[in-house]
Image (cartoon, rainbow, N blue to C red; front, side, top):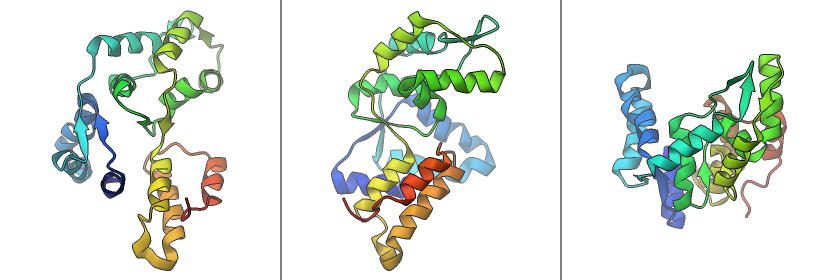
Amino acid sequence: MASCLKFLKEKNSIEFLAPQRVYDECVTRPLGIKQYGFSALRIKRLFLEGIVKITEVDGKEVELFLNAANNIYRVDGKPLELIQRGEAECVVLMKKADCLVIDEKTLRLLVESPKKMEELLKSEYGKIVGVDGNYLVKMQQMTRGIKILRSAEILTIATKQKYFASYMQDETEAGRFGIFALRGFGCSLTKEELIEFENLNMVGR
């Protein structure tokens, strides 16, 4: 996806932002683990080349979001910690951005469909999941209007803008295969969603 982000920035003058915690999780820490080092270097290049910029966020707002999000659902009377600081920083950063790009399923479900999140937790724990309505409302107030995209949507946009033009007659297939590959790299996609992407017009606007 590194070259895809570079392509979109050059094609559309888009500005990609990321909080410090995300940089640490994607670059600083993985650089200390040899098997993840090369991927971390590729991501680091995005920052060095100015494709993605580290942007400060309000720490107090991050704590407020973490407190709300991680106190919504309870099992056996204990709150479930579902959201990590890096994700919370991304949500707060949305005050300076138009959309949030994240592949992680939990945050997306929490923002877009709290009820589905509740059902998923019931299935996972096999127990009744309590929902604190006050914290849910606080979380929804902080995320109202947030538009979330996954790397699959980003790749689809790039494909329609001729990202795979060099593949010539295989341009459409390259886009579709690319989306299937993203699932293997952590992009949350259901079988039904994969079918939807497969049926999209990948080379037209």
